[in-house]
Structures are given as C-alpha cells and as structure tokens.
Image (cartoon, rainbow, N blue to C red):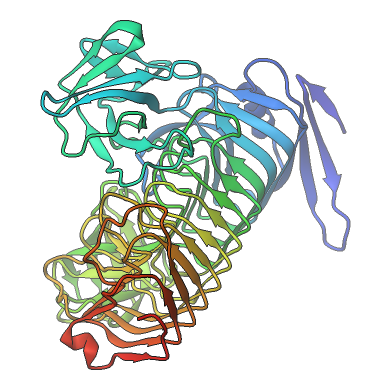
Length: 598
C-alpha cells in the first residue's frame, strides 16, 4: 500500500525474521516552504507501534505556526507549552534515517521529543536555526570611568532592535528576552572564549543608538570586556527546549547527528535507560560568523540508568558544560507516617521532574553526614503538584529522618563512558560527573574555559546528586584548560552541600588519573576537596607559554579533607615551585614518590 501526498510517502513494511511485526515506514522529501505541517500529518497518521522515518537529503525548513503543541516538564529547562516539530510518544521503536538532511528551524521550537519509547535511533542529520537566539557585537570602545561600552552589532542573519532605550532581541515572531542577560567575550580570531573573560548578567540602564550603527550600553561592570572582542548575549534564564529531548525512553542511539544551534541543550536524556551519542557534534557551522552553538549544555543525562556512552564527538561553542551526568536530590518536607514521606523538588528547573517510580530503590541521607544511608523501595507515588511528591515505602522510614534531609534515587544511575571526543573551548566545563557507578574517561582531547573535569554533587542550588565511587581518567590530553577569569583547575572536585552538612566528611571516592598528558600555561592542575582514594600516576605535565599565568600563587596540587591520596611516577616540566598544598587530614595518608620535577 502506497500513498503519496505533498512530498510524503507512507507504507507498511514487513520486517524479515521470525516473529517480526509490521513497521510503518514514512519517507519525506524536502519541499519549499514550511515542512512542519507535512511532518505533523505524517506522524498523526501512524498506526503501528514501530516506525521508521526516512528523510531524503536536502534542506527542510520548520516554523512553529502549525507544530504539535504540548505542555512539557523539561529538567534543567523552562517548563511550559512547547512547539514540537517531531513528536514521538509511546512507540515501541522509532528509527530516523536522515541521509544527510539539514533541518533549519525558525523561532521558538523543540525539534525532537521522544517520550515513552522503547527504542530510539537517529542518524545522519544536521540541525540549525535561521536566526540564532543570541545577540552578537564587536566591542569598539570602553569607558570604565563613565560606565559605558560601545559595540557594533552583527546584523546579517541576526534579529534585534532598540526600543524605549533598551535592546530587544531576538525579536523573532514576538519572542524576545526581558534582559540582555548572560554575556561573554570571545576572541574574534579563534572564536574561543577570550582569555580571562568573565561572564556577566547585562542589565544596562540605557542603550543608545549612535552613528555608524554603533550602540552604547550604559552599565557599570566589575569586569569590562576588551576592545576588539566579540560579545555574545543569550538573555536571562532562557532555556526554551533542547534540540533532542528523550524522556522515559530506552535504547537510544544518536549517530552522525550535528547540532549547530538550539534554544537550550543539544541532547537531553531524562530518566532514560541506556543511551549512546556517537560520531556526532555540537559546533557552529563552518564559515559562520557565530561564536555560540547551543545556549546551554551540549549533552545532559539526568537520572538515567544502564550504559551511557559519548564517543567520537566534537564539541565547541556551547554556553554551558559539554556533558553533565547526574541524579537529583529531593528534600524531605515532612514524614507523614511510618512508611510515607513528602518530599519536594527544590530547583525551579526541576519542577515536575519524575524523581522516583514504583519499584525504585532510594537512599536516605541524613544531615550532617552526606554519606548514603539506608536503602528502601518505593511502593506508591502520589504527585501533589509540580514541586511536592508523596512516596510510600516498603519498609518503615528511619526514625531519625527529618525535614531538610535528602533522598537520592539508587536505581536510576548509569555507568558512563566518554571516549575519543574532541573538546574545544566553550563556557563552563568539558565534563561534569555525578554517578556512583563506574566511569571511564579515556583518549579525549580536552580544552576548557573552566575545569576540564568537574565533580560536584550538591544540595546548594541545582540539587544534582551525587558522589562518585569509581572513576578512571586515562590516556587523555589536556590543553590550556581553565582559562576563565574565575579560578579553576584542570580537574576540580568540590562538593557544594548545604551549610547543614559536615564539610570534613569525604564525599567522592576512588578516582584514578593515570597516563594523561597536560599542557598548561597556569599552575592549578588538581584541586580536591573531601575525596577518599585518589591516584595520580604516570602523568606528564608541561608548562606552556600560551598565556600569562593568572594564579601565580596557586599550587599544582591542592588537597583539603582528603584521604588516601597518591602522587606516583609523574613528570613535571616547568618552573613553578609550589607543588603540593595539603591540610593535616590529607597529610596523614598522603603518598608522594617517584615523581620528577616536583
């Protein structure tokens, strides 16, 4: 059976093999104009639980006007009504073959949502926006004394206006930001973040149009950008949606998928079981004058389980971390009875998040000790609203559980492998890890504005759990990392727990940093707080002359409240003489032997 309408071919194909079921195949070819209604009609006509979508090579343009609409709770983004181009919900399997297709989006849209799907495969396509949701301008003059900066805005391919003495952008179909917001300086030659740059929230008192297309921003700043740098602004607290959102789905594969821009993260997997991102990338299109790709994290895995893998990918130009793997802490609101506790989601971008389901195991964590405590199983879940949840448990709740303590989901934690990736300078960290299961980070090229490897479970702001217990970082190359104006290090382990937790108790455990090469102009290499079990062995550190060091008084190795730290058989080539700073708690079990140069 074939039906061809408006560049669309729909058919049923019987898969070969014993027990195979019918799979509906949809073939779509690019046409002039808006492809959103074509795709929507095709997906609404699907009657089988298994679907394969085949895109012919070409450029597809998508507008939000006729997109599917759904209220979405999206972790680490802004909840709300979203316009979705490709909506897949409840399929046993979804396969998308892009054949090199380029999908070009306009305005506020979520390109892909996969929800409650058994298997998801997406291959060989590229995503971009015709007009980026950023404002970009070259700094042409600065007057720190009078408190203003002059900039020459980029105009071709950008959208903005000055109205009532304020900058309005992106000004696309009525969508604009209330503030200029998060702003960061970039090097015009490399398009990397400018050395020593501080990002800041821009809220000018006045924006004035001047001659030759110049705009003057009247605003007192703590750190002024340098003349000649490119400033990029993304608004204030604006994360509309990721390019790809996978939620409550499993067996996910992205292969050969490139994202040049998105209105949030690139790839977001939320409460998903097993996922791989391979041979893909997030970076600005070659030849473009843009300096920013996606406006948040490149890849993000929240409360996932199974094996999570990121390999052979390229990341550049994101305005947050390349990869963040974490769980979610909830705070105890009230113990209702012997087996029922009411908890709350704390961060505003976690509201509506599914913390636990029936059958999940959870840990109790009692202040002031951050150590994972007793385990219990969830037998019933009652969602009160987007913040509060009642959990009924199989066994009685510990008698010492009280308001302010936290719970962590034990079931939804993944193993994580990061292999063969290339990271170029972007805002924030290359990789942020918070899972107790085995982590392997090997054979990657790292370059970061902040720390390249960052471990931070926290109950302070984001409420992202938890501590690591098995991390291997091996055979990687680190090049001129931690170039931010804020102090960072190549590797930084620093829990950020609330004031009610004891800051002397070890949190992260069993980290091995072996056979890596570090080339760096600055001094901070390893900075650890509350780690029990750290091995730094067989690494080579070479001091470069790329930039002037920012932290001349910092030590190469800085340890606080650590246990069982070993620095063995490493080589340091450079002139810095401040090697190791360790407090008394660390010194008691510190081993330093066989090193050269320090």
